[in-house]
Length: 390
Image 1 (cartoon, rainbow, N blue to C red):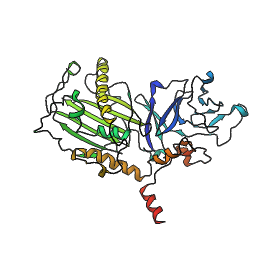
Image 2 (image 1 turned 45 degrees about the vertical axis):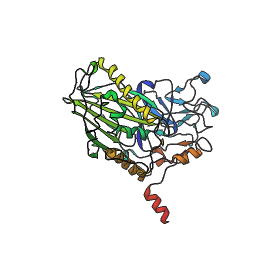
Image 3 (image 1 turned 180 degrees about the vertical axis):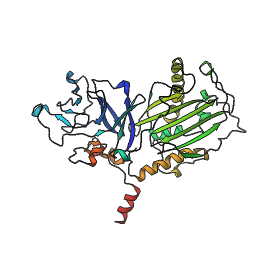
Image 4 (image 1 turned 90 degrees about the vertical axis):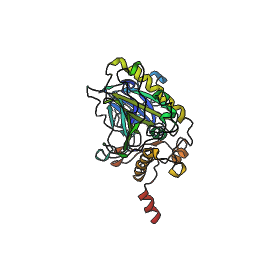
């Protein structure tokens, strides 16, 4: 898991004006809420007073949890604004200036595509990898389904790699029409991998020897055998893009913004775009089909071992069809070299024992006096070499 990327936090429709939401991302608790202008805010969840949860129990005490655009700690009533600054401490009197250390990390936020995103890291704006743009989102010739959220009990990298795998469809997804395999002629066609146009990832396009799609839902786009093209790519460690061309320039473009909760849980925010069957009546059937397909993947991935992706490709027997998976891992290695990977073993050793961790925010680069420790990171390759040579 990596800091310094944009992560989905919560669906916009699920973040109301009066109640904070506690969310775990990268193993760390965060709190999301709306300020007095209705803007989404995301802070570190741990109050620096006595460790209370800013997004803690709603019912406890029945007191307001959002006051004047600030989130209120339910333990002692400390009020934190959207920039993470404590503006009121009841025990010393409302309106009394809190000490400088009374602050928590606040993260840059973008609210797009029906999702609240936060940049979880400390890079200045000019150096941040961008949030992936859905370029056709506001194009009237395309339609977006409402955001579908899937919660799965496996590591997010396994989820991403599954979407980059052109060799599993015939075995995992009979609803695609692939179940009839000709053992004498079947093989996965070769394909090329290139950098994704928006940067920070990879992309490939592959031709499937596919039968035509059948059924009432697809009556406007039935295709002939052998003409289904599909491609997948990545942007950063946690975002995947899939394009499916079902013929006659009719396409689905699917965007998977993945939220690594921890090493065994992932929440996937799924935006499905299409440039055909634009009437709203098709939204429900398309959602239903996507859920069926997702469930087929889930059932397989729940039993994949080890749960975390191997640290070396030599721990698996990889084939030419795994070229995209290898390319994704090469991008992860680049992020490793930047020193952005969380040291999960060290994190687990101390988290919720002798330490409360926070993901470092951009403000830490210019100010000191922070109470919470930052999540431990694995040193970049350059730093490791420098340390080894003294």
